[in-house]
Amino acid sequence: MSEEQHYRLGTLAIHAGQRPDPQTGSIALPIHQTTAYSFKSAEYAAQLFNLEVPGFIYTRLNNPTTGVFETRCAALEGGVGAVATASGQQATFIALMNILGDIRESQKTPDAGPHVVASAAIYGGTVTLFSKSLESLGIRVAFVDARDPQKVAAAIRPCTRAVFIEAVANPSNYILDYEALGEVAHAAGVPLVIDNTVMTPVLFRPLEHGADIVVYSATKFIGGHGTCMGGIVVDGGRFDWTKNPERWPHLTHPDVAYHGVNFCERFGKAAFITRCVTHMLRDYGGVLAPHSAFLFLQGLETLHIRMQRHCENAMALAQWLEANPMVSWVNYPGLESHPSHALATRYLKNGFGAMLAFGVKGGRQAAEKFVESVQLAIHATNLGDVRTIVTHPASTTHRQLSEVELDAAGVSGDLVRVSVGIEDIADIQEDFEQALKASSRL
View 1 (cartoon, one colour):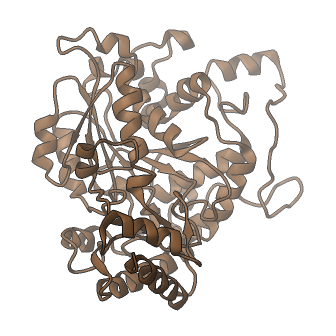
View 2: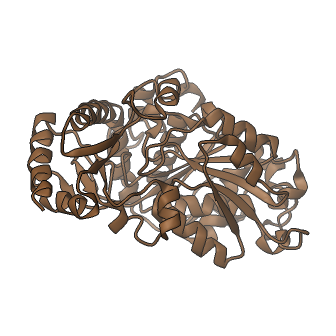
């Protein structure tokens, strides 16, 4: 990618990692729908499996089509490498597991086991992943109000190995002080992981503001059309794993699974992302299908254009809702009334995103009636589609959370989350007007 670094984001979104096929001249990227690859010799095969040379082994590890998608995502973020996964949840899971390493070893420490500090205001599925599934593996997660970096600092323990936040809290739309949170994490000697799904690299590049690792649900805005599932992990290559080598022995010590390879010594800044492939994908699976990678690349090619229209529509809809008497409140960081507006204007220079939330007068019952009454917008749990999608989080995405967890996540019964699409804004507003009137007749 070094020869492409001078290109700007819109150009990278179309060209990074790919030129016309040298054998056929095909401009479109071929879909390498294959599971395995022919080795030119036994010696070459051994070199591949010893991680001595780059190349293709098996599609659970790497694939030419998926590789272009990974290269392009890394270029858009300014990272040293990326790994594609079968879903956004898988991306979050393997990123954290690759940081934590051998959980059995960390459980031998005096404070007994690996620990992660996470923002309380995150996607409900991630809360469940952390509080239930990871906890069942012996990984403890402390949920804190990340709007206050000092609360994050206070939650960090000697056994803490990562700080996890979302670039924009889903669905509460809090904007955080990313650089301050990065300083807190780095002062404790741990990486900051940011889920940038809602913003995309078009609107926000976390690696430029304190993040070390970025994860995405590519299912959302990257794909943009609701056609396939996928995730991505991007490594900034800036976190120094060798500074406290005893914390990260899986990266800084010889790896018995690869005949004593030391990942930091052999792969340098790409140690983390390389191990994501050689251990996380190899052992846990969850690999992205080549055809899905192709579809995501189609989405990336228009991402910078779509996000502009998404943001324009979201701002117009937020302003319209704020003036509507059937709406109690509106939560969109582009509005001056939003409590995080100052941080939003500081960090988000290209738009405030496509996700907003608002409260329907009449409470939970009225909010449920609203999502049932839309005719143009779609009542679903996805976001990041070209179509406008409405969701009642308390009934769906955050349904498994307790009342305390709902409150911490900023999810009230009257809240409707909107992923604003790229339709004509007047049509979206007219649809919302009739749905609000239906909700007010209860």
